[in-house]
Length: 305
Image (tube, rainbow, N blue to C red):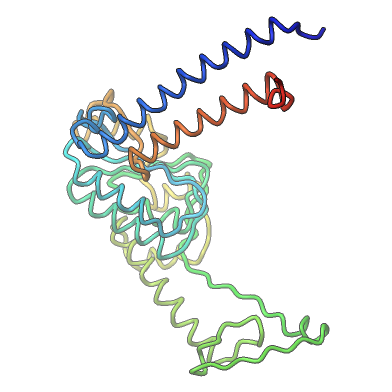
C-alpha cells in the first residue's frame, strides 16, 4: 500500500532531526578523540589502560613483518599496568623475518614480564617460532604444530615460454643476481648458493628452539625436518609444556606468577586511539546512512521533492 503524502513528510522531518543529532554526536566524539590524542592522561582514562591487566596478542593467518604490531608490543613492554602477555596463535606460518621480529619483541617482554603462549588449531613454522619466548606453551591435543624448517620456492616456466614463442633477456651485475628466476633453469652453482642461505636460516630457527625449549641440539635437529606434530605428540617431545587453552594459561599464571585469574585481559592494539575512534565513527555513520537511505526509502528517496 503506498504511503500518503503526510506520512512521507513526517518521515522526512524525523530523519532530518536524527541527522542533526547524529552530526552533533560525530563532532563530539571527534573532539574527544583529538583531545585524547593530545592528552595522554585522558586517552588512558578512556581506553582503561591505567588499571592492571593482561595483554593478549592474537596472531592469525600469515605472519609477516608488521611494524605497528611490533610497536604495540613495545608499548606493552613499557606499560607498567601490563602484568603479563598471552600470545594466542592460530597460524600456519609466515616469513622467517616476520617470525623473527615477533620472537625478538616477545623475548624482550619475557625478560621483564611473564609470557604464555596458547596454540589454537594451527601453530606451525613461524607460528611455532613466535611461541618460543613463552615461559609456558599450551596447545590442544589436536593442534597442528612443529614444521620446524625453512623453505624457498620458485617456479620455472622456460618450457611454457618456448611453446608460446616468448624469450626473456636478462642483464645482471653478477652470475647469481637473477637466481632463482622463472625465466631460466636454476644452475647447480645457484642452487648451492640458495641452499647456503636456507641452511643459515634453518640454523637460526633451530637455535631459537634450543634456547626457548632448553632442549639438546641433537634432539631438536632430529625433529626439525619440516614434520608437523599434534599437540599431544609435541608434548611428549618437549616442544610444548601442557595441553590446554587460555583458562589453563590463566590458572598457571595465577599459581606460578601470582597474577590473579580475574585480572582483565585487553587486546594489544596496533592502531592508535584516534584511528580506532574515527574508524568506528565513520563505520557507524556509513552503516546508518546506507540503512536509512537505501534500506528504508531506497534510492528513490534521493529524488523525492
